[in-house]
Image 1 (cartoon, rainbow, N blue to C red):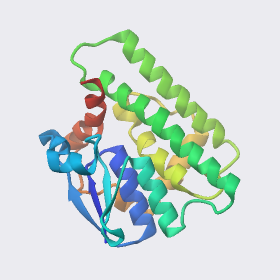
Image 2: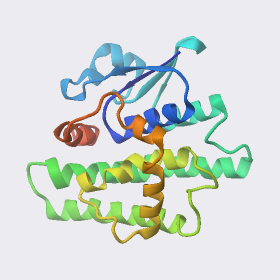
Image 3: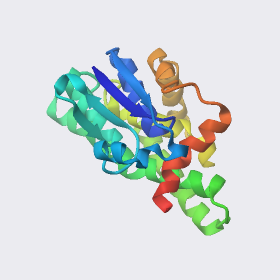
Image 4: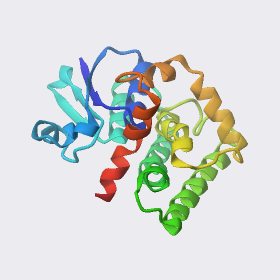
Length: 222
């Protein structure tokens, strides 16, 4: 049995969406970020970085995977789904997952923090993260100009990026000027498994979603 330790953030939703797409049984252990459960000793013993999500594969000797991108890769390879068999196409999917982890997620997270939650308003900092987030969204838009998904068929590359694009409003980043990205977003948002994954670990209120979506970004600054 798989166990997902998670909360209502884009990184958490990436994994719950993939689990729902796979249709495999799993249990959920909610992690209350506002109570800093992710910093407690028992959790850090599983995830040295003290962030969510964490996956435990109990059927594989309680094997633990932390970092959302690594979890996506582990699950895709374990079940041989949502990742191509062809070596080059597989590499392309992994490239986009790494791109999301190193660029889109951190920049959108910081844009959200400084646009909405940082007490002191710093125009130059806000502009820096907002503009860089828009640049990265433009990269996605260009990639999607001639294709339905980032690499061939729907894959973990799309799953990795989708929750961060979904949070553009909270980040204060406009996407109206990206028609190809909007088309891609609408297509993925209609998938039943995606809709189910966004309710894990529980359906958040609007306020909860606002607070918990950016909490990991806050800890980057702390």
